[in-house]
Image 1 (cartoon, one colour):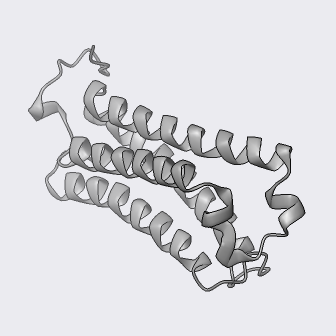
Image 2: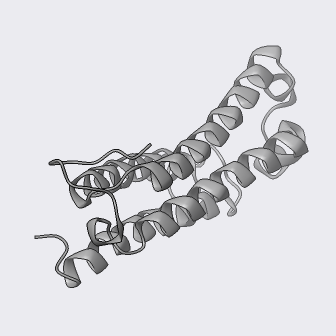
Length: 154
């Protein structure tokens, strides 16, 4: 199933260079990060951040932790589907712009609780999440910039 815009037929001439590869790669990264975090468990993953044990072992927190990373894995699967199913430069541009906005919001959320923000997660490794987010923003933006340079976008 292909989603197109303006009645255009799917195909390489109607696709942004790198769109499929970038979304597939980031989707797979999301799935792998989710599986890694779920398999290691909250206690191990959050140990460097000194989360109080009464919070860490609370049934509500453990349910949230599982839900969060299951959701992250599902987003990864959706990214792979979007990479494979969406054609048409306008549709792909809309997807990329939306993903950039969402990823910038995730960056803000990670920044505000990192050592650069309010220090809720006081370990310097809290910056790693910010770097991952910004790397994904750069990857999404690079597709748009390459497409513009190739004359596929105005």
